[in-house]
Length: 354
Image 1: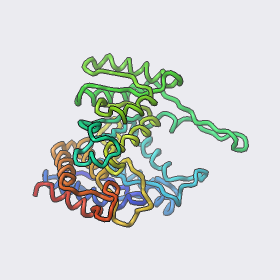
Image 2: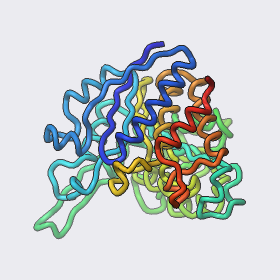
Image 3: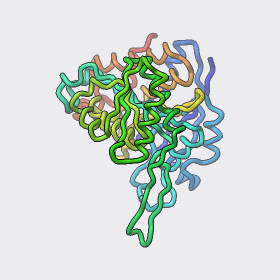
Image 4: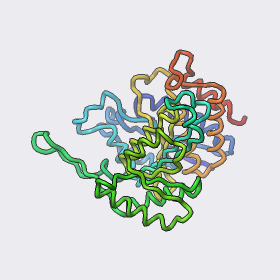
């Protein structure tokens, strides 16, 4: 197989972790007899500086011609003014909308070697393996919004349609069928009308999946249960904002935001793959960023967009092996003996088959 990957390195540590992921992706593809070609594009703050647009048309063209998209991170203090007309995050939202990437998959799996580094008791982390399925192109992030008067009041609209909920619910139920057969749907149906629509629609879709056990969990209760009994969750389905917050909270289970990958998918095979962490401008250029979230995002790219299941599994096993060997980046180890970005990447590469 020959495949083309659009690379949007972005801002801050984005170029560093994307470079690491490219090294691992290329090696894994080569092991399987496949060839990857990379085409780079500007997105985020760097694109604003160069073109005035966080997602230039040229970058959209690069992504349209590719089989998958690998993203580093966007944003930083330079572009953080919330009143600015153009902001890096607008490029990310536009990219999701343009390609119809409505389902965001965020796996949270605790590596046994890192259990001692999490702030929770180690016994709570046994067998934690959660897949968050976050609705990505609807909800409050895309609803009507306005500041009124002299800026003394404003509103953002949380709106969902039955179709938007239905299509992401199908993704979540199908994922649960391939896992342990349990789905927790998160809402705030006791207060919000949009969430009552969410719950009704999920209940309707559940009839198509009698082999999946469904429970409804209010978002505040879910936030608590994720820290008190995380191993009881299998697949967690949530709207755009709730899914964003809860999956970031769950980074405490894995030990660091730097550990967690994600895949944003639509109807076809093309997807957007990125770590869930931000651009971390405070450590950019120091060579100490954790590349694992981006490398595992690359494994998801191999699996979901290219259909290379064995190569994806090789990458995941190589990451686990490097951690078992004691490698830790600074976000986890927190001391001067931590591995650099390059050292962690080299260790992962060394654990791939020759």
